[in-house]
Structure formats: C-alpha cells, structure tokens
Image (cartoon, rainbow, N blue to C red):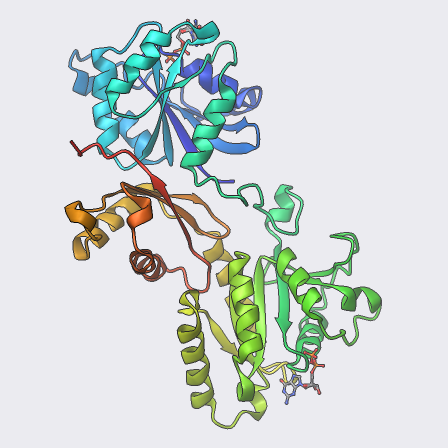
Length: 451
Ligand code: GDP
Ligand code: GDP
C-alpha cells in the first residue's frame, strides 16, 4: 500500500513517541542509513492491517524566530503538502494552546486530510483537553496514549475511514504473494469468447519468447502460470485449467468457460480482452469488459485476425464507438489490432500491456490533485440544492491498483452522479489514466468556511 501520513503538532505533544510506536523496530534500520535527517524522519509504519509511510515532523517547528508563523516552518508545510493525511496531535493534558490553534487554522485551509488526535489520554486523563479540542474545528479528537499504546484501534478506524475504507483495501496484489519480487511481475490474463484466438495468441507469445521459465504450479489451486520476460520486464500469464492440463507441452489451450474467465480476471492485474474484427464488442464482450473494470483490473482490447479484416478503419471505429457508448469507463481503453496467427503487432500489444500496468499503478500527488480540483470546480461548480452550494473540500488518492480517490464533500448524498462522472472523465484525461478503472469515494468532511 502506498500512502503517507505526517505527524504534526507543536513541540512536546508526543509526535516522536507516536512515530516510534507506529514504525517500531523498523525505524532502527531506517535511521542507520545516511541521508536520513534528524529533523524529518520517515519510516514504514504499521497499524493493524494498514501499512503506510509515516513522517515525523518533530523538530521542524522549533525555529528560533518568536513568531508563530516562523515556527511553522516551510518544512512542515512541505511535509504536509506531500502527504495524504496529517495526524494533528495535541497534548490533552496541557489543553488547547495558542500554537495548537494556529496549527489547526493552517491545516483546515490546506488540501491535506486531517485527523485530530488528543495524546496523553491514558486512563482517561486529559478528557477535558480532548473535549476542548472540539473548538479547533477539526471534529472530534481521537483519544490516544502514544506512550502506553492506548486508543490505537480508534486511530486505526479514523485513518481508515479517511482513506476510503474500501472493502478491498488489503487486496493490493491480486494473484500474488506480497514479496517485493512478486510486485514487479505483471500478472496477465487473456480472455474472450470461444474461437477468437486465445490459444493461438498464448502459444504465439510464449513460443516466441524462448525465455519461458514456467509453467509453475501453485499460484492457486486451479491456476497455472507461464512466466517470461519482455524487454527486461517480467510477465506472468495466468491461465486456468487449460494450461495446467497441457503444462508440459503448452499446446493448444482449452476454451475458457465463464467460470474460467472469472478466475483469470480475479488473478490478473492486466486483462487483454480478445475480440474479432467482424463481430467485435457484442454483448458477451461487453459483459467481460465490464467485469474486468468492476474487478478493478486494467483493461486492453486486442482485435484479432487483423490479417483477414477487410474494412480495417471501419472495424476500429465501430469498436471504439461501442466501447464508449456502452459503459462509462469505456472511454480511452487502448485498442490494439493484432494477428495471433501471423504474429503481427504482438510487440505493440506487449508494450501496451506494460503501459496499462503502469497507469494502473499511477499515483497523483495530493497537491497536484487539489490544484486540479479547484480548476474543475471553477469551470463547472457543483450544484446548490436548496440554495446551498455543495462544497468539495479536498481530494486525495487513497490507493493505486486501481487508482482510487477520496473526495471530501459537504453533502456527499446530494452530489449527483453526473458530477462524479465529470470529475472521473477529466481525471482520466488530465492525468493520463486510460483503460484503468477509476474509483472515487465520497466522504463527508467538515467545511472550515461554513458558518
Ligand atoms: P514531540 O516533540 O512532539 O516529538 O514529543 P515527544 O514524542 O518527544 O514527547 C514529548 C514528551 O511527552 C516526552 O516526555 C514523552 O515521554 C511524553 N509523552 C509522549 N506521549 C505520551 C503519552 O501518551 N502520555 C504521557 N503522559 N506522556 C507522553
Ligand atoms: P480460442 O478458442 O479463443 O482459444 O481460439 P483458437 O486459438 O482456438 O482459434 C480459433 C481459430 O481462429 C483457429 O482456427 C485459429 O487458427 C484461428 N485464428 C486465431 N488467430 C488468428 C488470426 O490472427 N488470424 C486468422 N486468420 N485466424 C486466426
């Protein structure tokens, strides 16, 4: 999982203590490395099932200058701008101070999501300070004790809900164990109706690349994978029963049943939907395409049997039209004409596969995203039901694979789907995310400017 959390607050509230608790022993390794500065420590943190990069900003706010402004150094500002979420700590025993208020005002105006945390609340001490923290306008403070490890499950809940609380949050690596080496192997599936040429394509791909290292068993009970590399990058072609039975010879694959198709999609990261020029994107093809997108995989369409296609221009146009009209995520899905039989365009197909994978993994910086959002709102403001305009407060990318965004909004229930589609289509265009499912989750966020 790739998101970053900054721990911010005035000196002595317990930032380093919390950082050490989240990062634990792993910090020792990080700190030994040269280049890790004392005033901005980063470490891989774990909080139950959440894994993220934690940034400790302790020390950043202690400039010599007396003014509050100066103490909030540019470094803290940068640290916060670069993270997805800020944990804003106060010392509940000390109560809310002027410097806390200053921090709070500044954080509320920024684009980064904030979770307010009242530290030093062990054994219910600091209850008064915690309640007082309401006045900071950042919602209810989560009571914790960084030193004693209390309140961490509430903190976990709060972070999770800010980061989309998606059901598939932990499902980062479909079809692979989470070792680092695994991460760089692209999991590919080729699906399509019977007789479109799947077996021919697989055999051609695998046969041409003589660096075949598989087939290897044991990815799952039923799946078998063939692994090879192309231009230095590794691909694992996931197949189901077909490959397994013919494992030794990798001969003609069996036709994929509906269940096999589903299984192949489940274990893939990138899916090539193979169609025929003459009968492209019929109902069955569209069903598969939708299924791929719904499962959050990257999708490409390959038009096979290009060698026999007579009206090539017409075929391409028909296919693109069908894709775009048939479902909202269909726009811009890469289409590659190939011939599995002659081998035409297979290199182009593989390159497109890797591009799709990269797009699927793409991350948009929170600061960039919010500049973009401001422009989108200006161009086309959200509606104002009953005279009160819906406010879109900020947006952050909670995860990749596929790109998943959280949009904090004053009235999530009232924001029309058409507005979300407007944002989604523009995200796809402006950040170059074709053929990848984009998810936007709405969350209710306090509006610092209201009343
Ligand atoms: P930082 O300057 O914000 O990084 O704060 P530190 O992590 O250095 O902590 C400042 C002081 O608060 C230290 O003496 C800690 O031991 C103490 N402290 C941190 N967390 C807690 C807590 O949960 N309860 C209590 N009572 N003290 C804490
Ligand atoms: P599958 O059922 O999707 O695995 O399809 P097959 O690979 O068994 O192919 C079905 C038929 O289409 C076979 O007769 C193949 O020779 C033929 N075929 C596959 N690819 C091409 C191609 O690119 N051009 C032509 N002309 N025929 C092809």
